Image 1 (spheres, rainbow, N blue to C red):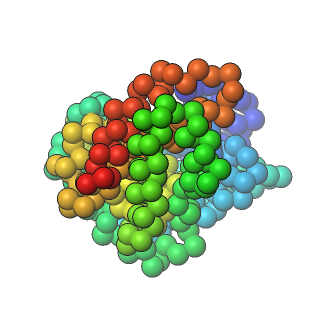
Image 2 (tube, rainbow, N blue to C red):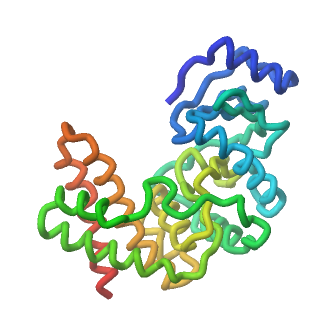
Length: 280
């Protein structure tokens, strides 16, 4: 989703980074925490949506700085200081070229390589810079579980409980660097080569099987066993995909006027498969 840039946004970006031509810039509005003013081919300016996102921006910028040079692909590194003003923050970042990969397709070797690079990162220097697990939708508390199960048909509710029980046991899995949203437009490809990965806001020390699940959610579930570093990670990735479907149901259920039937039908095969895998 995009919108036109405001005069104030263009003026701020020009002040912070006059080397770029911001006059033809547009604003990407799809992010959970930020909007992004984009001067194609030159630079971007991330802008906080909320005071909470403003307060977290420096940490997120520092995380990218700490990761710089550890990957074969580009990161959206800061090109200047973080600018703060009354609950709002902005920062100029590198423009990362490329586009989202065609969905339901992909190169197994390239995808395995991404997982290997993430797994190789030492978490020690990242202490204090990562988000906690479940930042996107919050942990599966008893109330959240109950609210989700009660909107599902009985057979799906049983499967959902099995999936969530398995996810709860994954807390004991040794943590690795998890991107948090490793799919779609966050991965910038060109002619089959991964040029860069953006939007590290949800990066956490967590179950590395999530990275496999994120990739599979975009490139195709049939890729899981081919790209996962181990059979155990492939097993957990299948279960995480089921949990992601439940997250969508919970989010949708917060709107009492929404008809959930089509969404539930859509996630049902994935959920049944995840429950089957969880049962062994």
